[in-house]
Image 1 (spheres, helix red, strand yellow):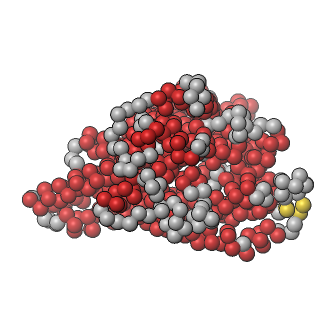
Image 2: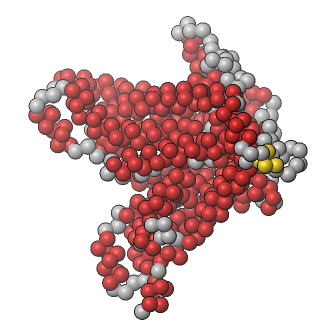
Image 3: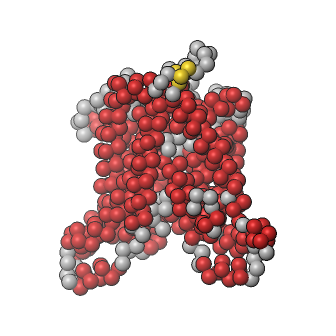
Length: 281
Length: 292
């Protein structure tokens, strides 16, 4: 019994070390964002600064060196992520429902279709981006919100379908069969019953699509230029004068990481399946 | 009867998603096969010119590409290996260190924070910490008398520094899978072991580890695939530098396409990497099916 207590104590110490390792880089972003210009670049570093919020003010309002570009880039990110999420959830749920409930009606047979869909998820994003870049260039769509919504859908829609399907799969078949016997059409079954039973799944798929789109960087970098600039692109390319911009960038990063962290904290129990890509149910 | 049945066919619900996938995934991919078979530099304003698979010949002899593959082997192999070991330690510490579900859930969620941070933001934070003069890491090194290291500027260290940031960000993913795997292990196994008076280490070796093997395989494979898919952290921390010392294949595709403006070559490289993705994806699905 005493040996067990020792073991537990060791585990608690390990967990504490893990938490410090895990949270330190986030803490460092947060404190850098509220440091004064001189506190940013000192040695020894300032661990607990007297908070100075003027970088946040610069970011979120017009004026200052950032002249509000931080604010507009966050709005761009919001528009693009919401658009992608909406598109993926609506069409993803419809497709997943058919794949789950009526696999025999899908052209290639439900199973190989599900395989193909997941394979898309495995592609490096740079692969579709090169042809899409040329396509959007030809269509004059580069540097618009639409181009990024379309591009993000390439990798989020397959993911949404795949994950939604596992939630429809969980609905007990007798419920669905009973409704069909009662004369429900497949669409009515989808709209009135299946969709409602799959709402927890719908919520977690939406949250994850939103987070993936919000955090995306490489496609955004390639497909945008000056008019549209998601916050990740601004963060990476914001090189005013060398190291001076540390605090500005840190402040932007902090604002940018808040929405995903909030979403996941609220929904944490429901997101396990999605975050593990269905590896764990 | 026949007509109502046909009207009732639900497949039209599938059509929009199917059409979207065809239009924005399949068409560009097929188009990229076409590009990969042509010599096409967008800089010259010339039309693409069919070149008999020369891009693929170029690819297998291009030393910059081959050494980037070598680097990927190190980066993915060592990185994912460390993530698996750390993930196992983390998930065990959380599960066995705390008994109340509430405490466990809070600590686990805190542990997941890194994977929610945009890779660009994570890379930026590590970039600041790795700074050779003002970085926290070198400061801590100096406190314990270690020499300061040029984390991102030394060609021998740069890729490992990026790998450390990647390990920081994605160990939580493995922790989550292994923790959930642990939850699904029947409690009766542990009760039986306790009755037998088995020690903690024995229980870990004989019960915990074997029951987690399949989850480790799935998690490791997903991470292997992701480790070459995403290059955000690499892009912001070193940009492949110094020189090409930390360049990975996916970043090299970007360089060929958007710095050297050689779309044909970039498309050929993409297809090589896609092949890897398809193989990896299919192994994942087979494993997942077997584990049910």
